[in-house]
Amino acid sequence: MNDNCKRIRQLLDAQAMESALDNMAATVAELIPSPQNVLVLGMASRGIPLAHKLAKRLSNRFKVDIPCGSIDPTFYRDDFHYRKPLATTEMRITEMPASVEGKTVILVDDVLYTGRSARAAIQAILDMGRPAAIRFCVLVDRGHRELPIAADATGLTVKTLANEEVRVLIDPVDPETAVYLVQVENV
Image (cartoon, rainbow, N blue to C red; front, side, top):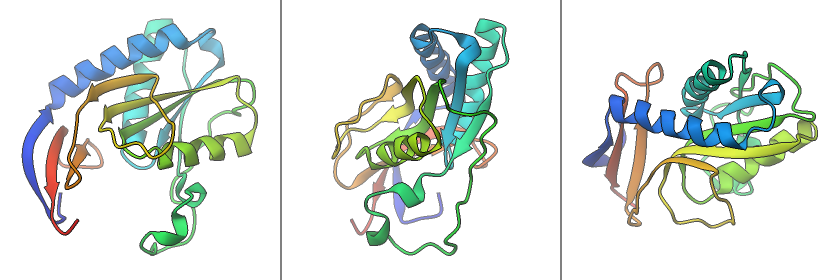
């Protein structure tokens, strides 16, 4: 966390995060009609390692290989032109190990906030084909929705103030694995 924020408190440590992922996997397993027809997609960037962890748990539970990929919905966001400019204008991360056509797609992100990133990812998926269903999983739901988006599986729900954010740190993207509530300066 090298930005202008101050840690308020730790919400999850590495062990609690693994527990939350176990619970999310159990919830998701109940939503899967056929484990042979599932695709797990992690949203850039911290949703990707979370998706791999979730796919591994589902593969172990169902004794089948659950494919896992990644998606970068940046250019599908409805506020893309209002956000600060990107250094590069090309898709950063998209890895599709299988077609979405007819699959139950498990979309994974680290934090659910306004719902705009989730809506963008859903649109990106729909542009690739017609899945049987899209199920949305988030490690942390912090509220403040601007769109009618809800997660099917959530690891933790926390209420935040306007000047607070939730930061998920996860190996290999970060030097530690934990979730923090932070106070953001200059909101």
